[in-house]
Structures are given as structure tokens and as C-alpha cells.
Figure 1 (cartoon, protein in one colour):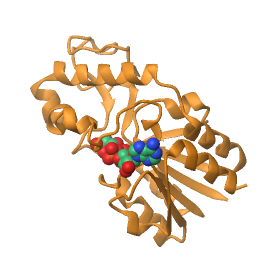
Figure 2: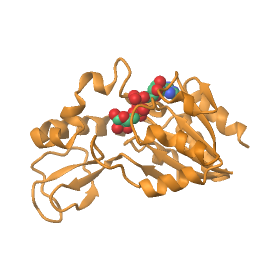
Figure 3: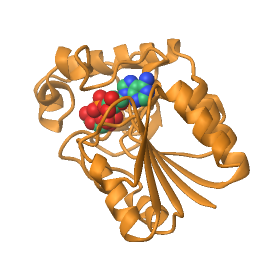
Length: 225
Ligand code: APR
């Protein structure tokens, strides 16, 4: 069975990483326009680097939970395409063989001047010279609001060829990811969401499995055989 899975911040919540739109979420303590837009980076690159340095340290201190581990196991038994909106590396550390990071990754650094990419150090600052062009134009390799998500051709193809699409731990607020269920369903996929509560695009799914991902995802994976 061809399965395409989309994960969001909710799958990493039980690993101790903040989600975005919960009452204690990242967008309660930081303004999106300040830390997650190209304009915010241009206005105050040091603030943006501090925000992602904090998230890089939090992610390094976190451990994959049972939901991440179950998806790694699923890849051993089925033709799985794993797409994540998350920028942490918990899927990789759980053993998932291939993870499509549509919003980039904390582990990546990008030169805004020459587009060179390299592995980000734990702490980055605006003065860091690009290893390729030496200009101080480094930024986190994260897709910000108003920028184009990565790997979309591969993702649309995975949605169109899936027998089963599952969205795990995402509020369904941000496009294009929020439109993935509708797209997969239009191409004949069975669509299920696994979430703690109802998402903004709940009506796009055939059914929902409600509860914490560390319990629901292993149970769901086991049910697939
Ligand atoms: N188990 C399952 N689901 C959970 C859990 C949990 N333990 N904890 C929280 N959730 C659910 C919440 O109910 C919510 O629906 O995870 C979802 C998290 O939603 P958001 O905080 O909006 O995160 P996400 O959907 O990943 O955000 C999408 O928005 O800001 C941008 O780029 C950012 O990738 C992010 C995108």
C-alpha cells in the first residue's frame, strides 16, 4: 500500500518541543512577522538567529517519541512518503530513512547572497561568513511565510499516487500543507487525520483518530499490518 504521511508540530509536542498555535505556542511568544518572514530577517537578523538558535538547542535536547518511532517502523513495511512541516530532526533520529522537509530544517544554513547551503552550527549569528562566498549573509535554511515550500513537485506526486494519506499533529492552518488532504482525496486516497483535537481542515478527511500522537500513531501503524 502506498502511504503518504504529513506531520506537524503536534507529533513533536510530547518530545517537549513547542507547537505554534497552542496557548503556550511559539506564535504566542514571538511575532511571525518578526521571526518567520524575509522582511523580519532583513529588519533584525540577530533576533531571527537568536530565535532559531533557541529552537536548535531545544531540538537537540529533545528525543523522538513513540509516534516518530512508529513512522520509522512503518517505512519498513509499506511504500511510505514522509513529508513534514517540522524543522526538527526527530524523524531522522527515530530512524525514518527519508524525510521531506517542506519548510526546511534547523540543521541547515543558507547564504542569502550566493545560495550556498551547509550544515548549520548550533549557534548562528549575522556576522557568520558564508563558507563559499565569505559574505556575512547567512540565514537559517527555513522556509518563511511568503516563501515557496521545498520539494513541492515530489509532494504533489506522492499525494496523487497515495492509497492512504494521513495528517498527524497539524492544525491545518497553513497552505499548501492544509490542502494536501483535499488533493489526495480528489485522487482517490483514503484520508485520515490523527490529532489532539479538531483541525481547521477536518472536513477534508474521511475520519479522525483523536488523542496524543505517542498513543494514536503506534496503534494506527499496528492496524495497517
Ligand atoms: N498529539 C497529537 N496532536 C497534537 C499533540 C499531540 N500530543 N499536541 C498538539 N497537537 C496538535 C494540536 O491540536 C494542533 O492541531 O498539533 C497541532 C499543532 O498545530 P500548530 O501549532 O498550528 O502546528 P502546525 O500545524 O505544524 O503548523 C504548521 O505553521 O507556523 C507555521 O511553519 C510553521 O510548520 C508550521 C506550520
